[in-house]
Image (cartoon, rainbow, N blue to C red):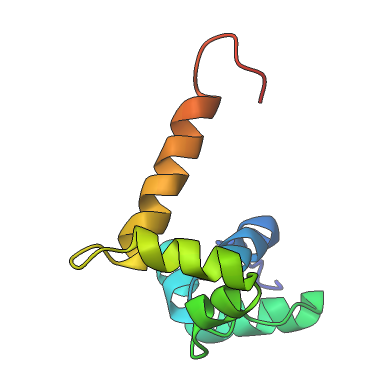
Length: 104
C-alpha cells in the first residue's frame, strides 16, 4: 500500500511569511517542518527566498528620497531603533483599520 503524505505547511502561508521577510528557518519553525521543506517548496513555486542576510533597512533607506531619509533620521532619537519605529507604525496602522465602521 503506498504511503500517503499530509502537507503540514500550506504553500500560501509559506509565501506570505517569506514576503514578510522571515528567514527560512523561522518559517520552518512556525510551520513545524524542516528548513529544506520550505526551501524546496519555494523553489517549486518559483519564488526566491527573502534574503535575510542583506541589510533590509539599507534597501528601504536607499529607496527613499534624501528628504525622506532626513525625516526618518530625525524620528530616531537615541534609544529608539528603526525596528521600534516600524513596529509602532504597523500597530498604529492596524489599530486604525480595526475601528468599527472603518472600511478595510
